[in-house]
View 1 (cartoon, rainbow, N blue to C red):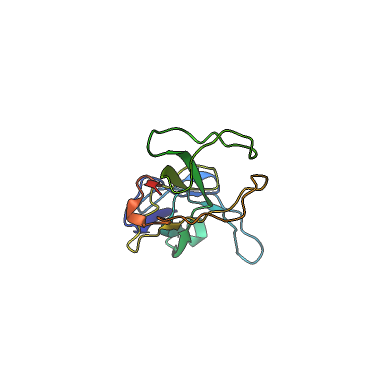
View 2 (tube, rainbow, N blue to C red):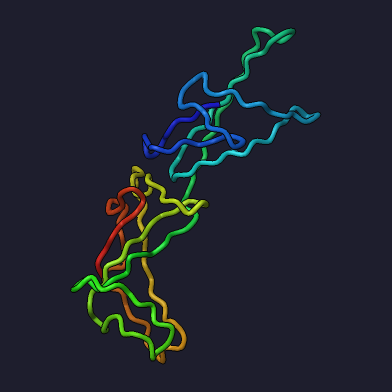
Length: 178
């Protein structure tokens, strides 16, 4: 098995097949497969980044099947498992959000003041996906706000800068001020 990047055209993380790393070019890496009576084998492919990839397979026959060469390939698209928001702080002085549990908790920011935060696209293991935002038609993120119960608030605040363009991401993360 081997793989190649399609969109984006390069990357730093490689897929694995059945838990083992595979090559980035032909002839690839050998992987033992168990075929059923119908001649089918199931594989587990894991790609820790985002984007469109091509997975190639090659089988070279031996013994009575000597000289037999079977080739196959297919494409897949991998997306982030989730996004995380971190490093939330007041822009004016860098004061970190104290995460008040209720209305009696410590004050963080007044309505209309700017906050700075980081949004990270993550894979199923919770690690950043460095190719996020590097696609030919770069994906982005839209932030939304939600009221936290117990604070006695009735009006959901509007975010002024709620769109993060894909070009704003580096290493799978983007830091913005809103």
